[in-house]
Image (tube, rainbow, N blue to C red; front, top):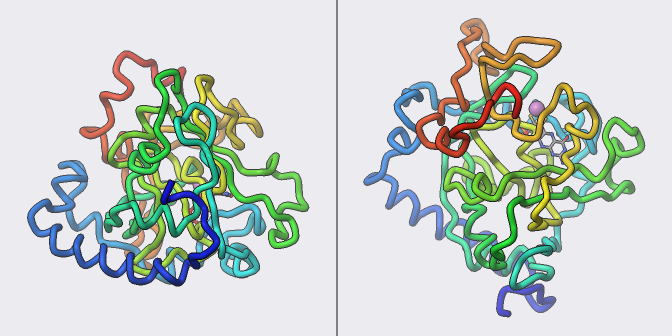
Length: 300
Ligand SMILES: Nc1nc2c(c(=O)[nH]1)N[C@H]1C(S)=C(S)[C@@H](COP(=O)(O)O)O[C@H]1N2
Ligand SMILES: [Mo]
């Protein structure tokens, strides 16, 4: 396979140019589509005014580097991200170790501005660069029996000071139902603001699922496994009562210790105000059908 791991390419051979080229293509193509249309009527264009680079890169959650919001920005530079490969295994036709540069050469990189909502009730708007997870899964060839996708973050204690604490059962794990994973809103991000992902934001490859709470958007992914059983996920294993498998943003279902009905948009200084949280984080029109007939109080 042309896109399997190969040592004769370095990331530098392909990444900057590929990202730049595809970004230009996206810019050219965007005029016709309009992000507001894609994001649905609940999200007015002005609500998608992005946060600043500073806000997005210094207020982070990445517990492998510590539990403080500033810890990832301080320590994540220790993580080596070159070379990088993702093992894709389980119920796929073409299992194996996929080199990042080989993956990128097959993908169309787009820019998408998504609202991002943490379970702790703060939110940001981030311009992501990345490709649809569906494209990567199709590269590996999902088999008929597969029903779920599980993801694992790099676990490298020598570069991750936070992993000496057992706050979570490392490696960080997340999961999606296959139809959620295949949804066109589900991105594998490789950058923000048109630049490569900073380590603290999950370099070089992280998930972004905009209608779910932030912890579903797992960072620095090294393994993707297709399975027919609902996978274990880190926060659900840590506290199943507080963190469900689905974790769709839902103002009507409270976290046991606090309400999820409103959120504080990060930044904005004096004008920062709490605003009502939207069902599915404002992406209801696009994703509600995935949960038709499900009791979202039970499947939180
Ligand atoms: N591997 C890993 N991924 C992770 C986390 C983490 O601690 N480890 N934190 C999650 C949480 S709780 C949130 S809100 C988002 C934060 O992403 P950001 O720091 O890029 O804004 O990353 C998610 N992905
Ligand atoms: Mo979060």
